[in-house]
Structure formats: C-alpha cells, structure tokens
Length: 126
Image 1 (tube, helix red, strand yellow):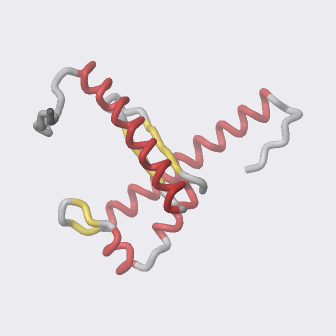
Image 2: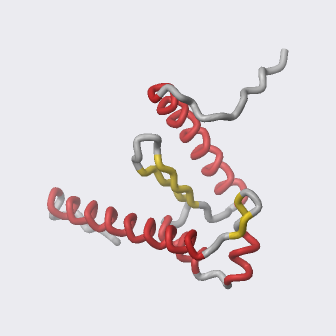
C-alpha cells in the first residue's frame, strides 16, 4: 500500500508547524551527516525554526570554513553552483552568508569564553 501524497503548503497550527520542523530538521541533519560520510564532502546547513531559533550543522569541517570556502569561490562558479527556484545567487545571498558567519563566530567566541570561565584548567583549542 502506497503513501498518500501530502500537499506542500504552510502548516497553519503553530504547535504542529514546530513539531514538523523539529522532526524534519532531524531527518535533514541525519541525511546531511550520511552524505558527508559516504561521499567525503564538506557540508553546512543553516536553519531557522518557526520561532526564529538558529540550528546549524556541519560535517567534518567547521561551518565557518565551509562558508568561507563558498564565499571565496569565483563569482561565475558560485553562481553556477547555487540555483534556487531558477534564480542565481546574488549579492544579497553573499551578504546574508557573511552576516550569518559573523553571528556564528560571535556565538562561538561567547561559548569559548564561558567554557574558559567554567573550566579554567581545560585547554580549549579555537
């Protein structure tokens, strides 16, 4: 017996939307992890929940390194690599990625400061 094809549209109920996001986010992260291991690739995901919380995932390399690698691609190669709904990556996407990268670096710095405060004898490589 086959599955019923769901219509893809916004879930109106906030609770159901959050639950669906959480389940699908976990599935997406699992698939990204498997792809990174099986194919030995660099991968990075950034997601914002319906409530605005940031979720991110990267494979074997730091997410900052993956985005820096993407940003440093020649414009033509980057535009060919990123197509979303028929539109090529533009300056707005680059600025968004740079802002997100800066935010992640800031969050990482705060986490390192907290770790150094809580565990002063722990040697933390950054």
